[in-house]
Length: 158
Image 1 (cartoon, rainbow, N blue to C red):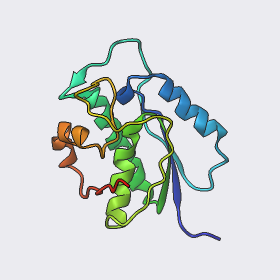
Image 2: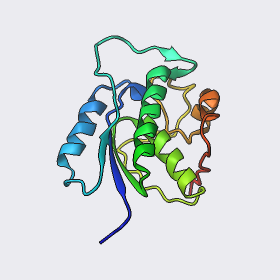
Image 3: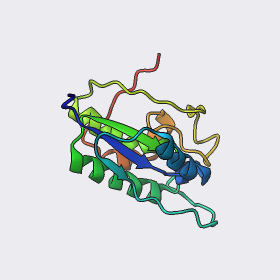
C-alpha cells in the first residue's frame, strides 16, 4: 500500500476572479471526484452576498484572498501531506499549496494544473481577474504578501 499521504483540499475561492460560480464549480468537482483515500479539508470561504468586491492594493478582494490562503496553509500544515489535490475555485487557490510543496521538496516539484481558461495576462489590462500567482504582474502587485512565503517556486514556462 502507498505510504504517501495525499490531502484533498476543497478551496471554493471565487473572489479573485469575481465569479461566484467558481464556488459552485469547486463543490461540484468535490461531488464528482472519487472518494478520497486520505484526509479532506475545506478552506473557509465567504458565500457571495451580492455586494461588489473592492480592489485592495491592486488586487481584487486582496484581504479575503490572503485570509483564505492563510487558512489553506494552516490546514495543509496540520496534515503535512506528500501530495495535495486542490479542487478550486479561482486561480488564487494555488498560492498556499504551491508554497508548501516548494518548501517540502526544496523547489524540486512537478505540478499538474487543469484549468479551462488562460490566466497569463497583466492585471493592468484587467483588474477584475487574478492571474496565476506566478504571473510577474500579479507577483509585483502583492510583493509584500509574498515576503511571508518561506520559499517561492521558480516557474519554468515552456
